[in-house]
Length: 255
Image 1 (cartoon, helix red, strand yellow):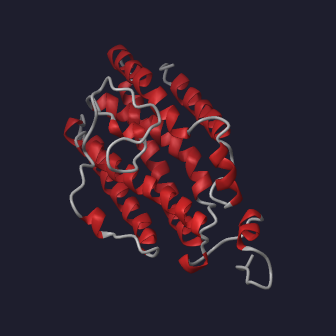
Image 2: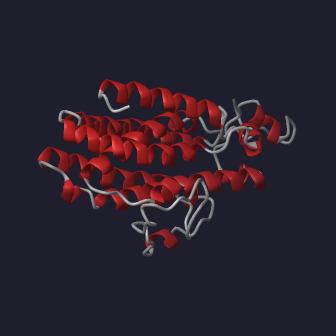
């Protein structure tokens, strides 16, 4: 579907019918704002995830696990840069991200942020909590990875073409991060001690990842759906994630 002209239809109607935009100049103000919010949340979450997982590299139990952790750290930073480059075409000051930001900053382990934003960036609240050792890092990577695998299906079909293109590149790499996490979790779950530790981490991270899907019945979702920036409601995505989590953790006796 080609982009509309003033002789065809209003651009809001075009988007609601599944249209795709390819340049910032065609984006209405409200659409632009929601799109930039989406991109900023992704960029900040990837940078925070990369910084937080970097500390886990030295906790890895072997060379293979260390390489896997380093790969995740590197590629998450690369994913952030890819989307940041799209933000730059909208006039965003990319130098703000080049300067030092406390991406590794974390709240207390027992803090309860819910879904609210915290601090001076747009990362998801789950990325404000600290990791507590290798098993904890692996569990968090698996749960958040499974969540992202559900959410990326929405992102690869957003109505802004250049962004959707980047997410289609990012999606299989993020899926591989989840696979690496599951490999690590299988090794951990081979012992009684490992399963006990992993279950404690699941209990900690599960509710914190769950809130990243947002509230049920979100009024804002209707706006995003009309703009072609979302397709499925929060509760549908959450249910899909819950099913994936149950399936993978049951196979490892970690439910």
